[in-house]
Image (tube, rainbow, N blue to C red):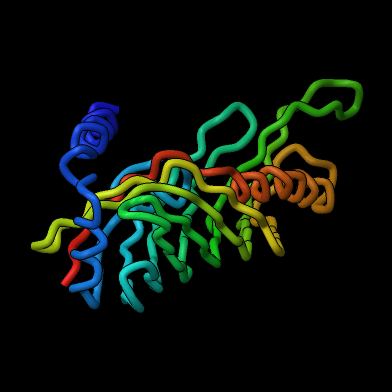
Length: 219
């Protein structure tokens, strides 16, 4: 959280420095390639700290690709496990002014790993703690739309922030398979316990993004 606040303050106080009319536009006009990273932000894609490679078509349009990944440990009352998350896609950034820009992207995002579903069920008139462990995979094609500011020094340094990002899932594929079953009457009940998590994964893919900070270099 401390690093998050420091970068936020940097963007806020740096704005007057970069806000000179046309300064960032002129710097973009002299650049061909941009490389960078999103080190922090309020969303799962930001947690993957994606690396980006972009190419300037002109001083107001950048086309690029990005990729990131991380592993999260789930530890709640009903689900535990280790899940890997990958985020890969292409994007376009269109500058309306010196720094303000609109972002559009198409991404393939995936959760995969092993999870254990825990719940209390009634078996033989008694409460029984049931567990179903298995592999889960959640794949989604996602369209993202966002808005933000990005400033560029004439020597190449780029800093910015995408303030808000809307994510829309175009399609979602979910699968799970049981490896161990404890407490459930049969395998189908255990499989259903993992299958019930599908809506939650889809919501995670569609969760909006906020304050994605960006650091990069253009040349």
